[in-house]
View 1 (cartoon, rainbow, N blue to C red):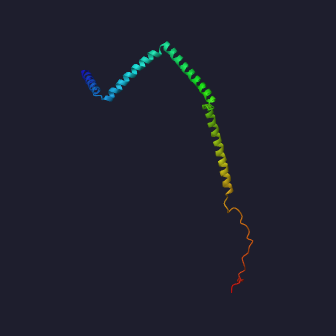
View 2: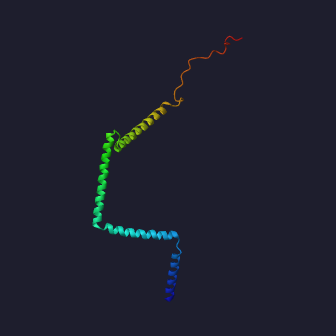
View 3: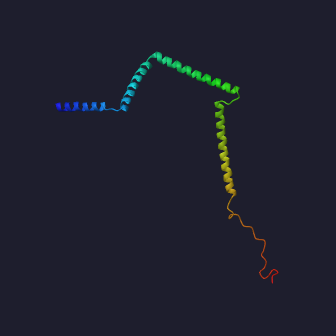
Length: 143
């Protein structure tokens, strides 16, 4: 049993030596880990407090109210200056997309109609020949 205890002590010593040989990045990682644990502990203690949760609720409500009020004021300002609001631009964008879709459909229809009209000429019947060549026996004024 003492051999097992001695090997365990030897392993712990080698682990400590390995820890002592850590580089600067390992030391930085340990520092960040300790900092995170400290911040988490402080945050958990603060969030457990009822007063803190009431304060955060009030701050969030105030921020939401300010954002809504600013949005309304900006809309009134844009309307006064005869400029489009974000909602107006969104509506225009949606309308433009529907117009583009209709234009694409019309282009496809015109393309299909053009391919039907440009049928190969071999399908169309050839016209009858109405002019006859001159007879062979006639020299046509040649001697």
